[in-house]
Length: 394
Ligand SMILES: Cc1ncc(COP(=O)(O)O)c(C=O)c1O
Image (cartoon, rainbow, N blue to C red; front, top):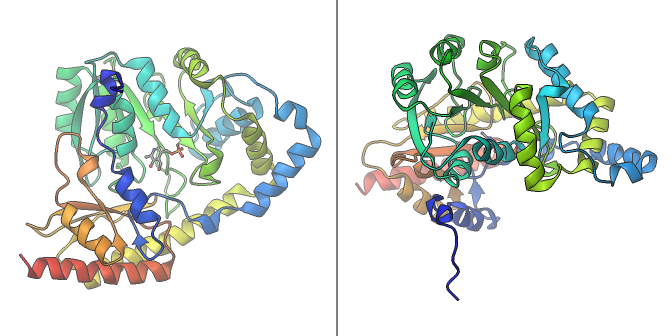
């Protein structure tokens, strides 16, 4: 049988997932290649208690169909958190619940992109966004991501010349680089976009995972009607619940809601109710503080080991999040480091899939949230050995 798949499927980049799966299913390999939050930091007892309470009190409602926009008290909780945490105006009417913030990428692209439309993103950019957008066959324009955010000259030129429908960025602890936009660049981006028809799509998967308490305001603060933010409970509560949200002007959400309804009617209502019960009967801020303290220690450990054991590599110094990126010495290929690493029982992710227009041959992404501190120490020693051997062979 020759299956007649749609052309758009062929446009999607070949996924690295198969190789990653092979790596993560071998327990003898220490993997920094994936992107999981620490399993030890999921409050399983607290979530189990919330689940029991919901099932005892309200099982018929919790197990029934519900509206597409999501559980109103949960949407109010999210809007309230924006007001208190960031001081930006937000109402429940501007919040739509989704199946993890990954679903926002698909639905937003479906809502905005015709085949051949331009969309902007960072270089390197989040692999999951490249995959989601590619299925709608846009032209993806990339803007180099510098230490403090996108290259503004390239960004301005791209917006003026190509008029992208939206620019997708991760201002807080970007995946894959771990970089954070400066407040000045956030303002400058808003100034460049003001008066154009390009929407700023902020993916804020990591905004609550900063290692310090310094406030960082979203681009949406300066451009309320022209920016949207996707958020997620995956990194602060539990990714398996698959609950995230889109924070967007009500006019955008009305259309987004139509697309969401066609896709799946609504997100898992039982999980929404359990999550809301959990958030309002536990101390989520104390829990996030605990996560941040652990990730801060792990990140520092990984950076110190890079400096001590592999001084020939440069690396980013994340202010939060779950990832950092390292640049290999000239001539060393990221693919080779991956292949040799797996033979030596340590896995890192080559930068290749994060560059839509080619590149990443000299960069690797490392996740520091999933492995224990002992595993980080062991894995970094193994990686140093791999790098030393490959450098000698050059
Ligand atoms: C930048 C970024 N956006 C979105 C997601 C998707 O997360 P979720 O769908 O669990 O909210 C991830 C997952 O790691 C991510 O790194």
